Amino acid sequence: MPPKKRISENDIIEAGLNVISKHGIDGFNAREIANELECSTQPIFSNFTNMDDLRESVYQSAKDYFNTEKQKRIVDKTPLFAMIMEYVNFADKQKNLFGFLFMNNKYDAPNLYDFLDSSNTEVIGMIRDLTDLDAEHVIEFSEMMIFYIYGMARTLAMRKTTLTEDELKHYVLKGFLGLSRQIREKQGLKGDKEYQLKVRKALDMK
Image 1 (cartoon, helix red, strand yellow):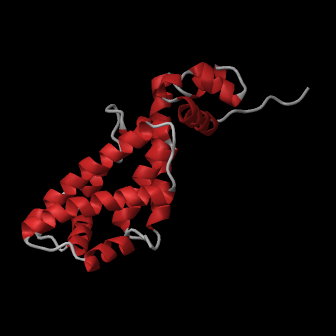
Image 2: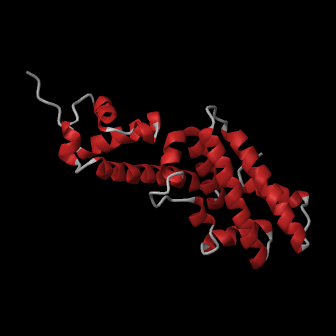
Image 3: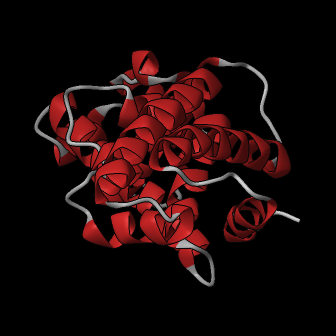
């Protein structure tokens, strides 16, 4: 008789992550996770107090996964656009996980507002260098970008179809240039070709 397969806590968390990725949070239950593991529900409740306990662990795993993917983009890229692109790409390609992470008020998500918030002096400095906006206008612009990118990401997460990387970049670029043009004009700056080329280069667009 073959030895009984030992199912670890990490195996269960990974299975929970897979279940949410496939079926969304509504499909997150012990039976679905057991089916993913090809076992009974007994190992789940041997390793976790209850499903809420497991859900917390799966949430942390999803959060770590997102942050790892974000860090991959940051290497040799502009951190500002690396974060934005991973955010919209995650919404587009990992729709159910995005909903679990960013459209769920129960958890402390690694959200876009924390990244573009005015207290993040490093990112605000990047935006100021890129847009040439002064201290007052750069804060106004960053807040407008939060609404634009979050709205874009929610729309992508609710669509059945997905976009290519170039298509995602196109919409990010369009929003960034469109919103920054309004704020730059308020400050008396012109939306010249040199500025547009600088933004394209930062976004890694040809």
